[in-house]
Image (tube, rainbow, N blue to C red; front, side, top):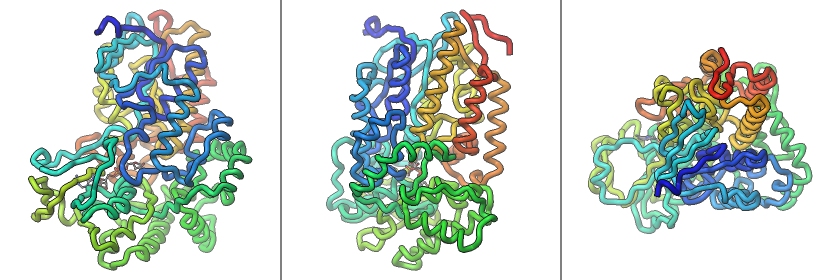
Amino acid sequence: DGVHKRSTTDVVIVGAGAAGLYALYRLRKEGYACRVFDSADGVGGTWHWNRYPGCRVDVESVEYNYMFDPELDQEWEWSERYAAQPELLSYFNHVADRFDLRQDITLETRVESAVFDEESSSWDIRTDRGHAVRSRFLIMATGFLSAPSKPAFEGLEDFAGEVYHSGTWPREEVDFNGKRVAIIGTGSTAVQMTPIIAEQAAHLTVFQRTAPYIIPLRNCPMPAEYLDRVKANYDKWRAAQRQHPTGALALNFDIGAVETRLWNELTLEEREAGFNVRWENGGLALLLNTWPDLFVNPVANETVAEWVREKTRERIHDPELAEVMMPRDFPFGTKRLIADSGYYEAFARDNVELLDAKANPIERFSKRGLIAGGQEYEFDVVILATGFDAVTGAMLRVDIRGRRGLPVAEHWSTGPRTALGLMTAGFPNLFFLDGPGSPAPLYHPILLSELQTEWITNAFAHMRDRGASTIEPTDTLEHEYSEHLDEIANATLFPRANSWYMSANIPGKPRKCLMYLAGGLEYRRRINEAAAKCYSGFLFSHAGVKDAE
Ligand code: NA7
C-alpha cells in the first residue's frame, strides 16, 4: 500500500546496469542514501535482457569491465577473449554481491514519473508498484540500448506463430528445432544469433534491408598465459585505456599500440599493414583504435570500406549473394561496425537464406508468416532483431518534469540537448549517465559512467561545502554545447548514415546526432574544466534562491 512505500532519500538512480551499479557504489561510499530502481528481475541491464543465442561483447573481456577496483580486476577470471552474455551477467551479479549493493536496489519496479518540486528543491518519484520517493537527486542510468524498437508491422497480432524481440528475450530457452524461423534485421544482434539458430532451425530466413560492414570477431577461449600477462600489467593497460579517445584499445595486449598518425601521413604499405593487423586481430579495432581521421576523411574511409568488401567477398560462397550482402549504402563505421562469428559462412548451409528486404520490403505479417515483395513466406517463429530507440528511448519512457512542470519530452521535442552530456537546463539535480551528448557509445560506456559519476560526486561535494540545494546548467551552456556537438558531427561522415547514432532508425524521431564525437579525452577535458572553473555554466540555488545567470 502507498503509505508504506512513501520515503525520502538523497539519490534515486534509475537502472541497475553497469552505470547504475557503479553510481550506487560510489555515492553510497560518500555517505549519500541511495535507492536504485530497475524494471528487470535482476541486475546487469543490457546483459540481463539480451539473452538471445550468441549474445556476447565485442570489446575484449579484459577491457570491457569496471576499472575502479584493481582487486576486482585481479580476482575475476574471464573464460573467453570476448565474454558471452551469461558470463557478463555473472560479472555484474558478482559486483552487486561483492560491494553489497543489493540492499539498496528494488527490482521488478519501473519508475513511471519524476516531478521536480520547486518548493522543496527535490524530485518526487513514483513507480508502478506504488512507491512515492522524495529524493534530492535523480540519476538516469537507463542505458543507451535498452528500449526495444518494434516496427509497427501491420497484421502482427494476426500472426499465429511465436514472435520475439532480441532485447526482451525470454528466460526459458527458445526451441527452434524443426521450426521455420525468420530474423528481421542484420545489425550486431542478428549477426550474432544467425549462425547459432542456423544450426537448430529447420529453415532460417534473414531479412536484410541494409547490408552492414562485418569483420571477424575471432573469439577464443581465454589463453591462461594471456590473462596472466594482462593481469600482471593491468595498471599499464588501464592507463593506456584512459589515455585513448575511445577508452578501448581493442587490440591484443601484445600489439596494443595506439594509432595517432593521420591517413595522409602514411605510406600505402603502412596503411595496408595497419588494416591487416586490425583485420587479423579481430574485434572492433578498425572502429575503436583506428586512424584518427577515418571518420572525417572520405578517401581514407572509402579505402578501408573497399578493403573490407574485398575480404567479405572471399567469405561468401555465392557471388550473386555476395553482391546483395556487400556493404555500400553508407561510409565504413558510420553505422555500428559488426564483429561476427561465422555469419557469412552460415549462408552456405542449405537451410539458410538471405532475403533482400530492400528490393522486397516487408509489407505486413499474415496469419502464417510475412508478406514481402508481394510474396508470402511461412514461419513458425519470427525474431525482431530490429534494434532500439537508442540513448533517449528509455529515458523518455519516464514522465520527467522539471521546473514549471515542463516535460523533458517537450524540452527535447527537436532532439535531446544537454550541457556536457550530464544535465539539461530547467531540470535541477537531474543527471544522465551514458546519456545524450556524452561520447558513449563510441567511448567505453563503463569507463564513461565511472568518469561521469566522479564528476557528479565532486559536484555534490561542492554543493555540500557551499550549502547549495540545487545545481542546474544555464541555457547558454546547453545551447553552446548542443551547437558544438552538431558542428562536430557535421564535420564527420556520420550524418551520411541512417543509424541509431543519428536517431535515424526510428520513424518520427527528430534527426540529431546523439553522441559527442570529439572523443572521450576531449570530453573529459571539458567536464573537468567546467568543474575546475567553479562549475562555470552551472547555477546553484541556496534554499530556493537561484544564482543569477
Ligand atoms: P541495430 O544495429 O539497430 O539493427 C537493427 C536492424 O534491424 C537493422 O539491420 C535494420 O535495418 C533492421 N530493421 C529495423 N527495422 C526494420 C524494418 N522495418 N524492416 C526491415 N529491417 C528493419 O540493432 P541491433 O540490436 O542489431 O544492435 C544494436 C546495438 O547493440 C549495436 O549497434 C551494438 O552497439 C550492440 P536498417 O539498417 O535500418 O536498414
